Image (tube, rainbow, N blue to C red; front, side, top):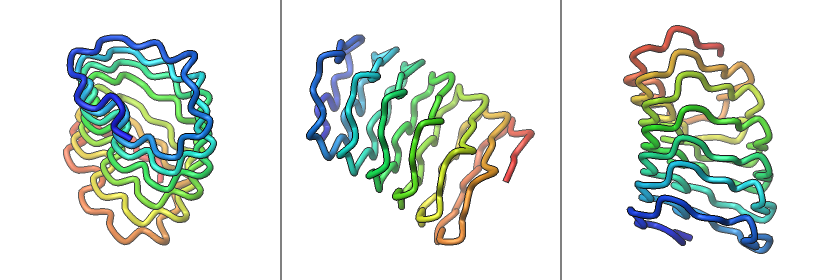
Length: 171
C-alpha cells in the first residue's frame, strides 16, 4: 500500500507491464500524487484486492483514469478512493462489482469538476458507511443512484453536503 504516496511531482507513469496479480491491498497507491493528470490502469489485475481506500486521494490534477479492467468483487473498502481529485472530469465505473464493499464514505468527496456520475450498477447492500460520499462535489449536476440499497447504512451524514449545482438525483 501507499506505493507512490506523496510523489507530488510525478506527472506520468507507465504501468502497462506492472504485475499486480497477487496484490491484495492498493490503498493509497497514488495518494498525494498532485501532478498526475492521466492514468491508464487497464492492465491492472485487481482480482485479489480487498482494500482500495484512498487509492487516488489528493490526485488534484488527475483528469482521467482508465479502470476498465478493474475486478472489484473482493473489495470491502473504497473510502476516500477519489477524494479531492479536483480536476477529475468523468469516471466510468460501470464494471465495478461493489457487492462486498462496506465503506464508501468520502469516495467522491471534493471531486469539484465531476458533473455527472452514473452509479446505477453499484450494489450497495452491504455498505454501512456512506457519509460525505459526494460532499463538496461543487459541479455535480446529476447523480444516478437508482440501484442504491441503503438498508444497512448506519451513517449517511452530509452525503450530498455542498453539492451546490445538483439538480437531478435518482434514488
